[in-house]
Length: 172
Image 1: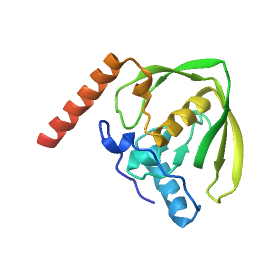
Image 2: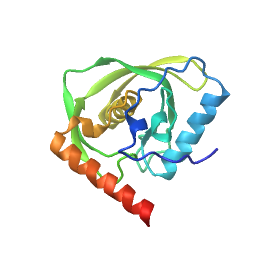
Image 3: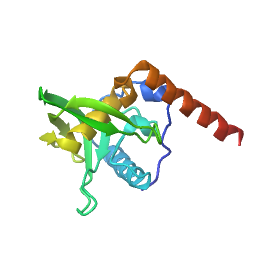
C-alpha cells in the first residue's frame, strides 16, 4: 500500500469528470487500498480518486466515530438512486481544500448503488454524516467541490487563499 499525493484546489484535475470503471480488478483494489491509507494518513473521512489524480469513479470513506472500530468502505461507480426531500446542513471540509470549511445543505437521506472491491453490486441507504460524506465524495467524481454550493464571494475568497498558499509553498 502507498500514501498518494492529494491534489489541492485550485487544480484543474479536481474539476474533471471521472470515468466509469469497466472491470473491478487488482488495479482498482490496489487503488482502493492506497486511497484508504492516504485518507487515514491525512486524516480524513472520505476521499475520491480524482483527489489523488486518478479519473476513475472510485471513492473511499470511513465515518466510524472515535470510539468505534474502523469501518472502511470502497465504492466503485457509486451513484445516488434516491434522495429525501428533507435536508441537513453540515459544516464540510475537504482534503483538497485544507483548513477551509463551509456549511453545505444536502439531502438528509440518500440511497446509493455501487460495486464493492470484488465487483459485487450493492445498495445502501445513508443518513447523517454517512449521507453527507458519500454525497460529497460522489460530487468529486463529477468535478464538483463543496465550495461550489456556497456563494461565489465565499468560494472565490477560499480559492484565492489556497492559490496564494500554493504559490508561497512553491517559492519557499
